Image (cartoon, rainbow, N blue to C red; front, side):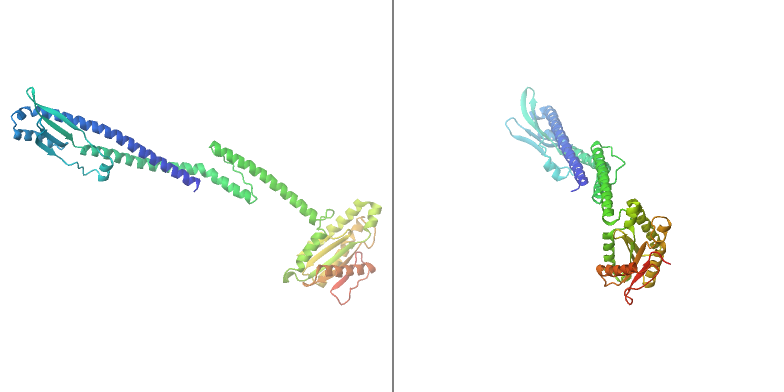
Length: 412
């Protein structure tokens, strides 16, 4: 059961208990008061009849006695009137059933009234002539009790509707921060860290919300640190720190994925570019100059392949780069190799290298059924063939295969 339903049930139970207690206490108090009134009423009537019947009792005039008793009894306020002698002989009896059509029978059975019987002597001069017994009728008392109970019930129903409606609205407002806390906790479980800017007025809930906000900030900070660490590890795992390109691990994974993918990437070209004389640059000009040469070459490659769709590059060795162009045919691969050869003249013009043939490119075309080792081997053969050629010649290796030895980086 939800907390909302528990609080609602508690309010209803408390109201019912308050109503029941109020009815019991008020009914018992009113019952005691009415019994006292009935006793006083019966005693006053008995005393009055005792005085009125003195002369008629002396002469045993039953007609007069009956007339006087009937005059009192017919008002309906009495349950029983008995006129008897001192010896116990009954001279006259009048009875009235305890009925009240306005009071339910179950109520009269549940709240039973036993009206007291009052007794008075009938005097004849200084002598006792008889006794009169009067029992008041409890019908009016039952009516008063039932009216009191019904009025209390109606008042309770009105108050219950007002209190329950107001209480439910108040509880709904009171529990709104708890629902927001629940949503905040769910968001934290889904790696989100929202904050509750509006704090509740209830002190305990305010403390809970403030604690959740502190935890949300810490979790957000932890998520940010973990994300930054993950990104840093990803870059370390798949990025080359010198050139900013992908490393050999990245290159192998991407190429493997392409070779294992669907028909739309079933063909393409692999270009292996290797700089010539990088070690001499490191020895003569320093490693910083060598890094500048690598970075400049990577920049040229990025600019060239930026115009192509589904193409990426990586640094796969100390002086080697791998370029993958998905869906490229032989003519496109030769054209890309030619353009890269032209681009590789720029480092010499910028003074980053003084070698005329600064780099060589080997090209291999692949099909979907090829494997990464076979494709790399084929491209490497083409690269070695290009390195063995003069800088102004072109050749294919093998001539009838889908691989090609590209021209050296400098052309004439």
